[in-house]
Amino acid sequence: IAADYRQGYVEFLFLILHPIWTRIYAGIEVDAAGLDRVKEAAKQAPIVLVPSHKSHMDYLIISYVFYLNGLIPPHIAAGDNLNFWPMGHIFRHSGAFFLRRRFAGLELYTLVFRHYLRKMIKEGFAIEFFIEGGRSRSGKILPPKFGMLRFLVEAVLSGASRDIYFVPVNIGYEKIVEERSLMRELQGGEKEQENLGDLFKTTRILNRKFGRLYAQFDEPISLREFFAGFGVDDEHPDDETLQVAVTRLGHELVHCLSRISTATPSGVVALSLLSLGKRGVSRDELLCRIGFVVGLLHARDARLSNSLRVPLQEAAAELGRSRSPSCGDFSQYAPIGALFEDVVDEVLHLFSNNRFVSTYQDEEETLFRVEDGARITLDYYKNQVIEFFVDEAIVATAFLISETNGGASLEMVRHESLELSKLLKFEFHFATNTDFPTAFARTIEHLTTHEILALQTDTLVVAGNASFGLPLFRNLIRGFIESYYVAALTAQRFLAEPMTEGDFLARCQR
Image (cartoon, rainbow, N blue to C red):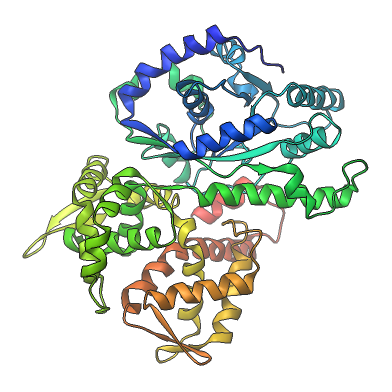
């Protein structure tokens, strides 16, 4: 189980990784202010880094960033599938400790592992673990797993440390190195047991480019402060109260991971393309749609990649003076979209080279259209930014379900929104400190501010931007709702007799 940290191995691993990453990646954008907060938290108590998990590269990113910034890399909880020669030896001496995926029935192993975690916390080591368990296959943040989190909490409550700080870290990619195998799996292929070792053993990744990496750090969460609101007794915690508190903490951590996602050009372009359904789009219209999306992201203080943030900041004053009034289409957002022409062209070139997008000539202009077989791939990148718009997508869908003649009762939209929120509560991560009435009221305010809906007494009606805003938001979650519908129909037709999960999923995909 145990790591055997040695600085020389960390430096050796850096010498291996640095030339590889400078070759395949265009750079790493690190949240410097967030990293400073991590440094301050580490002075007060041991820290536990909780990164998102989309790629095998995640195991190395934080250690790499820490090393570059003069920090001691964390001890990393790694699956025993990474304990292979010779990399397992190098990883162990670089801070990795290895654990089995399942502890059920292994009482002695569980006891030893819990004591090892307690020892690390007591000695002040930084720890890193993936709360999602496995890698996300959809691009979204997965629901939390609670086993490791519970062990860490119990270690602190048993006196290993006065407190610990949990630090959510979102690791974002323009393009993941496992994209091809992941897409085969999403299209119904067998799951491949590819691991970090396979990536190191092949030279194919060295001849490809994967864009930029992004590391965003959220505000450290003090365990003591978080639990204070639950009345958890530090000396004799009630098991039921403790379980509720750990569950709440787990959901808060994954919500934080979603909230600090980096909105990347590839994610924004993918979202804008998929909002069109199956029709083609001109470059000018696409830029207008992207202007609308980026404008919304900026309005809610989303974390934008530098390639989106810097042009927007530089042109902020001019955009404020020149904003067009509502005109019923995306053209009013052309000034914002025009800021990103170069970066959008780069993404379209990348998507075209990978055969995600095709071009064809209309009478007057070139149109872009998503290839049918590439929608799953683009969904992956769209899903990295979808969490910013989930509330609007739910309310827009609820309105379209309820409306007649361009209007719907506020109460009916509220009811349908609540039902959709319940349906999708395991797909997306809603804020744990915000109840539904508050979230609904805030979302209605957003939609009316952007002139997509208007509130007239107790009735919602379409506003000037509804013709494009409502379909865009609806299409963000339409695929998820359709998936639930397919699963329900399949269950109704075929579950008269017992069936394995694999067989059931295969029938859903037919």
